[in-house]
Every structure is written in structure tokens, then in C-alpha cells.
Length: 324
Image (cartoon, rainbow, N blue to C red):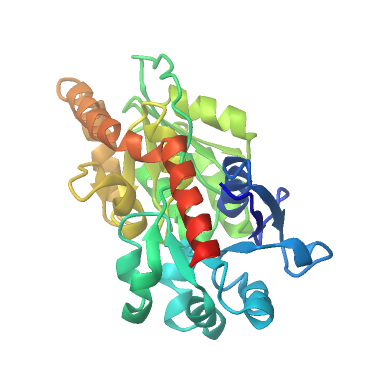
């Protein structure tokens, strides 16, 4: 195998600790023994040696995509579509549309993503599922139903639906909700504080280190994911591969990971529907069976998110970008 020099363009670096950065860092590790580096903007002082570019985000990496194409044409130029690309920007943003046109190849991160691309670009797109390591399922208390939601507080993640669902739940329902995420929108942070003050069964924990977050996912009975817009949330995979089933909004970014027949689904923004699902999972007689069925469905999807599968798909993509 020829060793290639790969540059990964990520609009977010380590200080952001978001999905773009985590994908970039994981891909850098998975692409060994290729030489991969991460930059926010290309070209830089080391640009002359780069042979392949993987640009995360069609709109936010558009300047780097254009610079590569201007210098080297489309050879070696791959663009990864995020949720905001697929479900907002490519419909109207000229820079995002330009990135689609200039790229030699496109990648989406869940199974329904290609269908959202303009028809003329679908043939050069492929799916690469992100991965996470298989983790031991930690003991889960029988005293209550522990629920966790993970995601920075911003409009696309729709944290208000979780907060409204918490208000629908009776305080004595035996359902405890932990909400993890930094207040990227100050108003949503205030809303989380207000919900915590009104609902003793809801706790907003703010941002936590990744290791602590993973442990809370492992100990939870359920992970809730309320997003309105998603390219393929890594936290869903982390839950699935930790033996923690999920309740998720019915959007392509979630359904493309969970599968069309997944039963733990509520409509976007439907706080009452989410509350009813949570109560069904806590029901004295049927609740354990409901959770076990969701767990079985998630277990069937877990092999899609194994690191060796993502590594193999990445290797094929990089090789195709270089040789075709």
C-alpha cells in the first residue's frame, strides 16, 4: 500500500470538542500508517506535500475546498457532508453548493444522506458510518429509570423538547434525566437552569469530559436524542455500542443510523410523545420488556459502527481519491 499524505480540514479543532473535531481526530488515528494531519484552513506552510484532502463541512470548509481545486483540480478532493450541510446549507448556500460541485467524491455519515443530495451529485457519494469502540454495559439501577441526553445546547439539537418532556413527567414517575452539554446558546442555558429549578427529576450538568460522559451513557437505561438536524450523531453510536438503547427524533440523520423499523422514535419537537415513550419504558409490568426490545434492536445495528469497518471504508476512500 502506498503511504499517502492526507490533510483533514476541520472547521472545529480541539477547543470546540464537537462532532467535527471528534471525527477529524478519529480519522487521523484510523488512517495510520498514512500520514494524516488536521488543519482549520488550507493551504498552510505544509500544504505542498499534501496528496489528498478530506474536508469536513461543505460550507464552513468551502475556502479550503476552492483553494485545493484552484491549485490541483478535483483530484484527491473529498468533502464530508454534515447535518447542517445536508439539511440546510446545500439548498441555498452558494459556497456549500460550490463545494459539492468541486469535490471529486462526497461522503455522508448515515444511510439516508445520499438521497438528500442533488441528483447530479449522488453518483459520486458514498456512506461511511462513524465508529466507536465496543464498551462494557455497566450495571443499571432497578430503583429508577436513568435517562441521559448529550449535546451542546444549541437550536439544532432542540434541547427545549427534552426540557418540555421533563415538565410532562410526574415528579414521582421514577424517571431521572441528566442533560449534558455546554450552553452555546445562552438563552437555552437559562432555560435549562429554569427547568432544573422546577423539575427535581431533571439535572443539567453542563459540559463534562468525554470519559465522564461515556460512563454516564453506560450507566443510563436510555439515551435521548432530540435533534431537528443531524448528519449522523456519534453519541447514538456510543450509546448503541455501550448497550444503552436510544429514544430519538424521526429525522433522516437518526433513522439512517437506527434503521427504518426502529421503534424508539418520536416526532421532532413532540415533547409529549417523548414523555409517553419514557413512561412506557418505566411502566411497572411492560417497561422492562419495552427497554429490552429497544436494546435488541440497537444490538443489531452495533456492527455497523465497529472501528475496523470505518477504517476499511476510509482506506478505500483515500485510495480512490488518489488513484481515480
